[in-house]
Image (cartoon, rainbow, N blue to C red):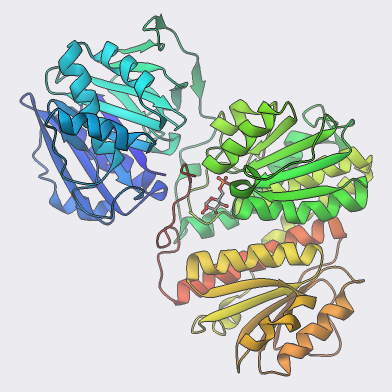
Length: 587
Ligand code: G6P
């Protein structure tokens, strides 16, 4: 959820920390702070709100070359400077990403030892706990190893110790952290975009690894044995993680979609046949699809394709519910976990539960070597490149494509791959339509509805989520036939309703439902691959009909563009919507 960055080296640390924080801001943006060592003393500066607020408070003359920084998404305790990171207790300062589950227990121990706390966070408790262990042991490596044994929960931690003011210590457990180096210094970050401007080489930390940065990088395992790590190389360009000419990352990422489709086809398909990168999941007679948010909706869409073409049942689960449900799976069930970040806590825990029960787990992930990718039995990457905007777009399209590929391979229907050939060009055309006129019908509304049947209902769920995420309009998706069982009472004069029909068999009934809401004053935006002669709608967005397996994928584009333009008209912070975070590492 939170973003962390650290540096130890020859250069002035403040610009490096601020720059890193800006590129990690999508991970959390309610407050931010830095801690630097100057003349053997730690100096902490924090501010509520965006990194820009912090920047204003920082004295540009700070000459330090070592420091840690954090951008927060509040979990324990409100949004205020006291709860913002870095925290400081005794000689220890730290930044923390994750949740300490036994912090109340630890706090009681610390209160008895006369520690006092300025805020309400679990992280400040952890800071004091590390200080206590350090005072007892006077050895940072031993302290961190003892901390790992006592602390329950998840953490990525960067630690400064005033008694060793030239070192940064780091460790992690179930929260991502990387470390990297150049001739000028050592960098720590939650994610690659924060350091890519300096280097593409990095090391991925494993749970319980301990790192010391002191002009060189030393790695230790939890038994404090010195270890070596494999160097990774980020395979995308610096531009990939930047907005470039676009006003927002969301718009840039929608515009990346044609390229993402081409990359997916290049990676999994050769001459209209799947290559060896696409496994054949032959033995399974039942599929579960598990995810959160948009990732869950990819499952709802793909379910229709698997059931129709492969002829096996598919059950979709929200990861946060899945963990607590009774499951009727067996050795012939494949559980597919969908996650852009590969770090979503609920999805990760659902994966762990599945593995405990000995059921096969496939991960469909974007971020390379993320926790879900590492822990699943098998991982397939969606190849979407870095996604920064909090509301997912290109990853969503890529997830639906990849799930469709898996279904076509299982169904022995490789001949349908030919319909993907022009998908990139069709998507490009859809991106370039003018969405402003239709967006004007939405942006002043308090509520909006999306209706469709079958696979179109899955699309409605995603379209509706996209709209509410970034435009703050209370939007709901409904199976078209269900409206009249209650929801239709919410339709008033000019209430915007998006009607989706991609399937000719389901279309007539959905149109009847659309007419029912039109008769009650709704504004109808119709998204279809087969325009009606009967002009029952107010506006229409037409998708070129190619084949049902790609038509639905194309329909996602106008839904994303509509949400984008509504939020644009409302002058909202499109890439960093209120209260959200890109990577949700809390349950
Ligand atoms: C957050 C994002 C959503 C995303 C969901 C799942 O809530 O705002 O856009 O769909 O997490 O994320 P994941 O990384 O697991 O796909």
